[in-house]
Image 1 (spheres, rainbow, N blue to C red):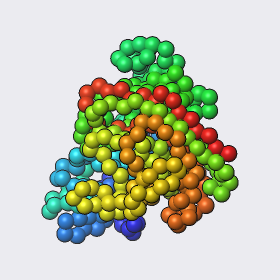
Image 2 (cartoon, rainbow, N blue to C red):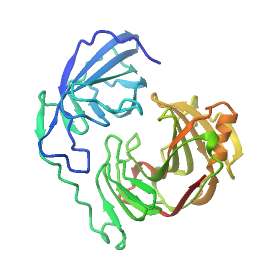
Image 3 (tube, rainbow, N blue to C red):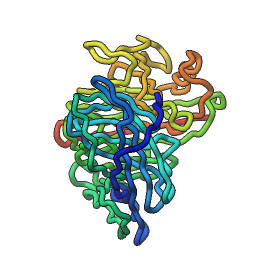
Length: 369
């Protein structure tokens, strides 16, 4: 849903920097922005709001805006951004089509929320991890995060790559690994890899609401569904006995308009996005569907920025899946059309851990033609 943008009445200056980026910034990189937040409409128990970011610094390729509410407000729906909430903290990330902001460029998004009689406007924001200062600044080159050494803190001694950075990535043999600590209130997380298909993570995240990270490997296909004759994948993982997490594929299509999550196991306080919920949680749209070599409960919903289709089966730590059969089922049943399949990822979506925990992909393969 999109609401008409009204005049923005409250402006807050924010600085956008490279603190969340692992690769060092060029010397004297300029950073700065303004954020305008306005309540555009109100009704008993709810409100609509619009946010506009103006980038005053060097061009940005992606953005994450964070703020906190003081009166218990809760986001219920959003557009032009992926908005999540953990307690009072709200995190808004660019959609697939509006991540780039040129110098002096702007980007806007909106949302609906619930609120009591008091609905005060947030007064502090951070953009890409840097707090508001109200002016354009210059930043020295960022200092890369120093990861624990191989052979320590649960990291295998023969790891070829180890990194604790929030957005750390590594490409090996056609696969790209991504640490991807994207959620608010996250703890520590170190990714390690022997290869693009044998990797793991040592994580210690608080068991609070909201996804903290999605450690994954994968490939980018950029192929229309009808042009694919085969997409298959095999996996073998080891996961902790306790915690709140899912082992899942994440398939993106049509420039992030669609997201397909294929859960092979789950534990603790996690669940899919759905159109309906009852006392037991999410209600599946389709039960006991046999497709792709497995039996699933299937859910459809939206996170406010894109449609989400979730396939969830009885827990297993290994198997082979015909991913093309699942994607073709979505097309046959008119959940999507002849989409362009973009990124296809596999890994661990972690909401919380029972102390320091190890997640390992012992082996993985993704083949398509």
